[in-house]
Image 1: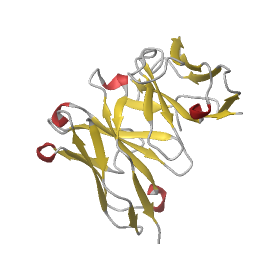
Image 2 (image 1 turned 135 degrees about the vertical axis):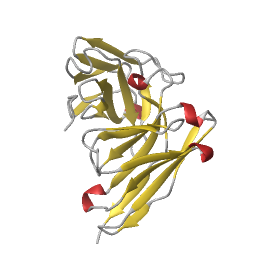
Image 3 (image 1 turned 180 degrees about the vertical axis):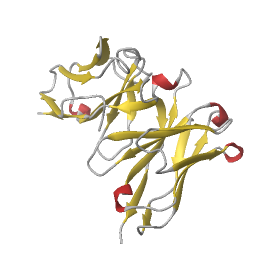
Image 4 (image 1 turned 60 degrees about the horizontal axis):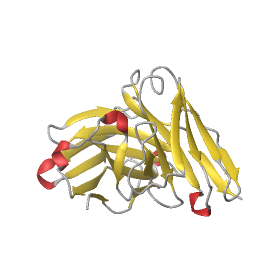
Length: 110
Length: 121
C-alpha cells in the first residue's frame, strides 16, 4: 500500500500537455524533495526528475516537475509517442524512515 | 560508464533459499547507497531497503523487515538480496539501484537491468 497517490492513467494526443499529480503528506512530500521515474514497457525505471524540479542530463525539457504543500506534479508538454510509459513519483518518508513510491500512472498517447 | 549488472533469472520452489546479486562498476562502489526495489507482475515499484557497502549499514522498509536480507561485499563491488525460504508471493522482478550522491532523498540515479524471480511448485 503506497503512501503516495497518483491517478492510474492519463492520456493525450501528440503535442498536447499532460499533467500527473502525486499526493502525499507532511512526512514525505511536505518536507522532502520529490523524484519522478519513467518506466518504458519491459525496461528498468529511469530517473526523469530529481530534487522536485531538476532534470538529469539527457532528459528533454518537455518534462518538468513542481511541488505545492503535500502534493507534486509532473508535466509533459509536447507529448510524443515515445512518452508512452508508466510514471512514478517518489520521496523519502521521515515517519517510515524509508523511500516510498507513488502508485504509478500509465500515460497513453492517443 | 557507471553501471549496475544483476545476476540472471531464477526459478525456484517454495521453501528454497536464494541470493541474487548486483555488481557495480565505473564509480566508487563503497561510497554510494545501493537500494533494492521489487516490482510484482503488473504492479508498481516498492522500495525494499538499502545498504552502504563501505560499512554495511543496512536499513529496511517496514514492509520487508525480516522478510529478506540485504548484504554487500565491497571487495568485489557487489550487493546481494537474499531469501531463506521463498514463497510464491516473492515472484517478481527485482531491481538494484544506486542512490544519488546528493543524499537518500534525491532518489536513485542508476538502475540495474533487473532479475526475474519465479517461485512455483
